[in-house]
Image 1 (cartoon, rainbow, N blue to C red):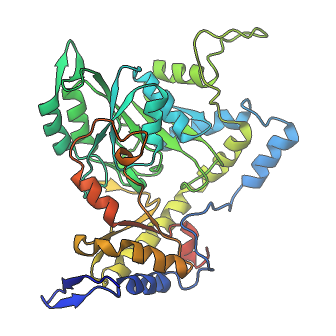
Image 2: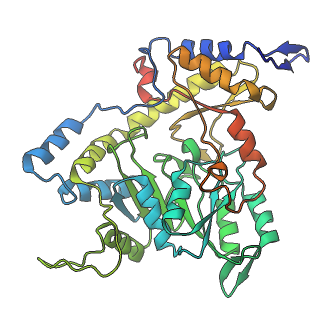
Length: 406
């Protein structure tokens, strides 16, 4: 077996071959009362879900028209502090429409993190535009504003109010920070870069419902933001997402586009542009309304679980538990372990040992820049993202785990 040697706190060189066992034992201790197997994250239904969904069925309002659709949009706007929320069939659809509203066209490039779920780049590709991959910083797991600013100083210039990649000749229209695993990125610094280079800031907040940056909800600081309510998110609508914006005109246009750009008329089918069949059904919205009512409880328990993990892994050499920065409040959607660089080669052994022990863990996403459909896209130096890809492990994060259940 491959082993790695590392110094302990006293400077004595130790053998790290037992790291997988240490991680298994620590998780076992933290989750001693949980039923096995322990999933990574599963939905929790403890409130009015059945009653609201049954009402949709009883009243036969199950598709994209219904009281719960409007109610969820109002509830989301109130919860996040956004002026407007427009619900969609999934988070990718929300990001797709947000980028179109940001003015992205097939001739453009969009700056996105290499370390992200594939939907971030796919939404760019749906518009015929080109993802341009940017490095992350370890303190946030998100876009590195200092490194990005220096990179754009070298390869971009503003011409007649448009940022242009001087190497490809293509306009660069938008900057898309993604709040990885619910941890807010350094939005102030990224906004400064976006303003300096005339880029529209569109937040991929798919994972960060309930997360705050300096007291402001993620997804509401950029011109537009996209949420996801997939089955494994903090709250779920089964499949679903939402567009957040503080711009009245953008909200109206978003609503029009997700309703297949159909003009209002009592009976005529008239469409004034290419729209999308992206509106969330009432059944899904009913589920979302019930879930959102329980957000305070979900977040309280997820944060308690994070504290438990933080305390437990403080005693495990070679591993650190990722925690929120002082100016943020994370929803701790998926909890994160980071291996030290000198034991990064033990990642797969940790993954194998934990999963064999019925404790579901997962690596982070394969860098988007390495996927076959995106491997020829422009990118900056991605050394930090590459390091995080080697070292990051997600561990069980369902809020009920802190109660001793799965």
